Length: 266
Image (tube, rainbow, N blue to C red; front, side, top):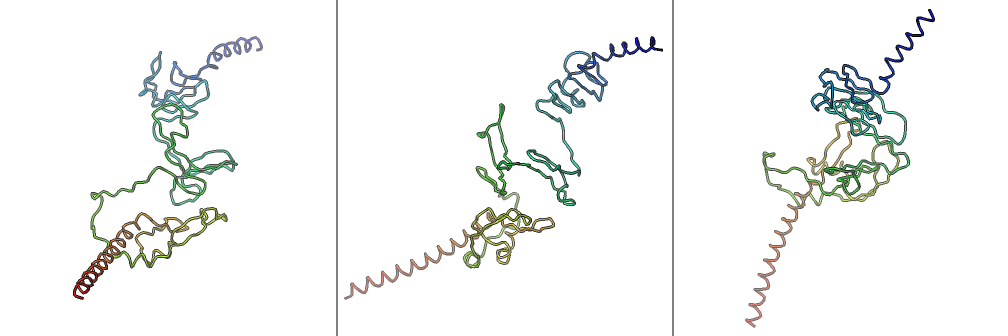
C-alpha cells in the first residue's frame, strides 16, 4: 500500500505545483494568481478583451481584486454594486458604506467615517489623471455637518416651473421674523453644541413662511430652512422700501419747491 501511495502523492504534487503560481477556473490562460472566466469566453493566449473580462473575477499577484475588469486598486468593479442590510463594525480608522443599517426602514445610503483621532469628514476630488491632492478637492463635508464648496447653484430654469406668481408681501413678512444667534449640535442624540450660527428658528419661521421650512422624512422629523427662498422676500421688502423712499423723496422735493417759491415772494 505504501508503495502505491508514494508515487501517487508525488504525481499529485507534480500536477498541482504549477497551479500554485496561477489558477484558472474555466480558463487555461489565467491573468493573475486566481482567475474565474464565468462565461468561458477568454482567449487561450494573450490578454482578454474588456468585453471578455466583463464576466470575470481576477486576483492579481499584488493582491488586488477585479470584478469584471483588471484592477488598478485593491478592489475595482466594472458595473454596479448593490448593498442590502448587514451591520457596521465597531472599529476605528475605516471608511464604510451601507444601506438601511443604522436607521432601518427608511432606505438611506449610509456613509460612515471611523475617523479615530483625526478631524474626520468627507472630501470629494476631481482630476483627469494622476494622483489626487488637496488642489483637486471640490468640496468638503466636515465633522460638524458643514459643507464647504466654491458655490452651490439650485436649479431655477423657467422650464421647470409652473403657476408662477409675484411675491406679494415683503416688508411686513420680514418684520415678523426673529433673527437670532445660537449654538447648535449636529443631531438630537449629540450633547456637544460645537457650532455657532446666526439665523432663524425653523418652528418660528414656519408660522410666517411655511414654504421655506422642510420636515425630514425620518423618525426625528427635524425641520430645516431653505435660506435661499428668503432672498425673493428680502428683494420684495427692498422694493417696497424703495417705493416708500421714492414717495417721500417726491414729497420732500415738492415741499422744497413750494418753500423756494414762498421765499421769492417775500
